[in-house]
Length: 227
Image 1 (spheres, helix red, strand yellow):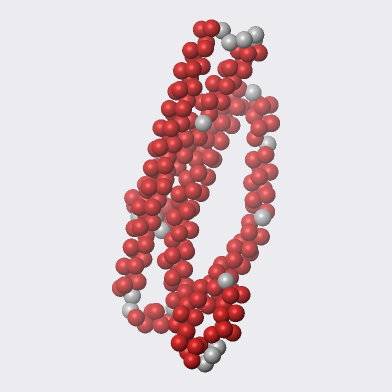
Image 2: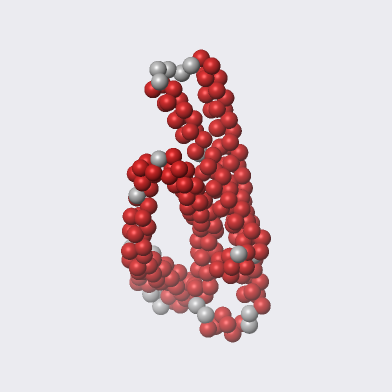
């Protein structure tokens, strides 16, 4: 599994291990959010029976303190396991790319678009950084915790489980059917970003020639349109 994550997401071995830790940390955090709901369920049950017994008041006070403590602890662990680990891995990825580029012959840069290389090092690495800190662990954690909730609900009341979880297959169907549309718009946005990066790079390299031929204003109008 570690090797599969390394190959799929361009991670180091430690980065793949940190990704798994981040997913588990998100699961723990989501589970910690369930304890206040359970405590609230007990409180509502007591209120519907005529009021909270005097002996239960201390239970609810202690329960609130315990819930807050568990949430803070789980959130602290989740923050360290996702954000800190992700930024460390992002630094390793950027250094690895720089080392790879340093060893490549100069002829390679003559054949490649410099704007494309810049976008790969800066924009793509930033996107991966955001994905591993905000999206992938949260998605995996939500799926696992939702599965746990589903099993718990079905063991308690299957009708309540169906009423709660019927939206999931509908949501997955919407995402699945809209995948091609999203891909088309994502490609369109990427093409626009590359055109913008190419224009800026070209402007920097040719600014002296543009000024010498009094073509700077006209060129900048086209560049502004790309931006």
